[in-house]
Structures are given as structure tokens and as C-alpha cells.
Length: 212
Image 1 (cartoon, rainbow, N blue to C red):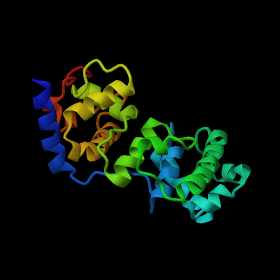
Image 2 (spheres, one colour; image 1 turned 135 degrees about the vertical axis):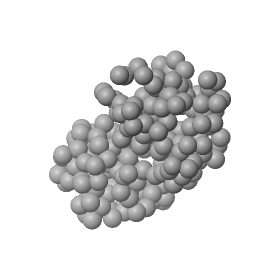
Image 3 (tube, one colour; image 1 turned 90 degrees about the vertical axis):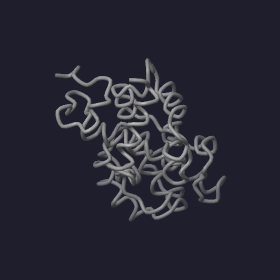
Image 4 (cartoon, helix red, strand yellow; image 1 turned 180 degrees about the vertical axis):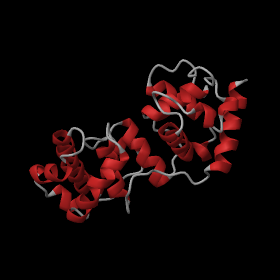
């Protein structure tokens, strides 16, 4: 099967099966999503959603978080992975958001990466989810699933995978394709023992049969 056909089948399937796929992180505005995505690095969305419930009650906007003590933020997020660093990142991010961007989460990927805790992947999540920009955030799920399906070929790094995915996916579906890949990796094409027998896209998966 050609790569072009595999992409076509991928888009056709998920456009029907999950046309409005979205992040499982809970948020009510761009600021809250930015906080949640920073916290989600090497941590489950489920755990992040538990923590942000109280965190967002205490810090309702960027100004309140910018004025917070790192130690207090730590108390709210201490069950998250790497809480010390993330507490510092959240306060530092909020200060820059207030002082440089007037508390408005920027749409530009380079501007987003000026803030502590915001790397390329996080910036792409914000740009795609909030602003529907045609950028692909490649996390472990996206990297694994794209490789197994055959959407990426010999991609050794997230950046290589990102370039291949954005090359072949139409701009208008890139922001939602990110979620298609994540959710498929989270619930079907799991890391250790993918559920190939119940997979609805096995017919065009390049790795089908390799995990039996």
C-alpha cells in the first residue's frame, strides 16, 4: 500500500468515526489549557484533571498565578510528575504571559516558547487546539501510532515525525489528526500490547500482525 493511500484511508476513517476529536484535558479558557498542558508532560491527563480542579479555583487567571508563591503552587500540584520544576514553570509562565502578552495566550509558536515549561510540543498543542493552526504536536502516542500505522517512515525523532505528518496531512485536518492519533494510541494502539484484534483500522496498518 502506498503512503498516499494509507493517509487517505486514515483521514476517511477518523473523519467519520471521530470528526470532533479533542483533548481530554479539562479547561475553560486558553490560560487554563496552557497550564494543563504544561502539567501534562510525562503525566496522565486523568491525573492532571484531578489536580487542576482545585488549582483553577485558587488561581483563576494569569495575574493571580504570576503573583503566587512557588511553594503554594507546589502544594496544589505535588501529586504531578516533577512538581518542583513545574511549579516554577507555571509561575514563570504566568509572569511572562502578564508582562509581555497582557494575559492573552499568544497564537504564535515562537512567542509561546518564550515561556518557561513551553517547548515545541506544548506550543503546538496550544496553537492547534485554541487557534486551529496547522501544526502537529508529537507526543509519545503520536510518535508510536504514526510509526506503527506507516504514516511515518523511519522517523527517529518527534521532529522528523512531525515533518512527515504535516507534509502528508491537509492543513485543515492537522489540528484534529493530532487527537485522532493520541486517542487511538491511548485506547487501542497501546504501547505494550496493542489491541489489534479489535482495531478498526487494522486493514491499512503497516504493523498489523506483528504483535500477535
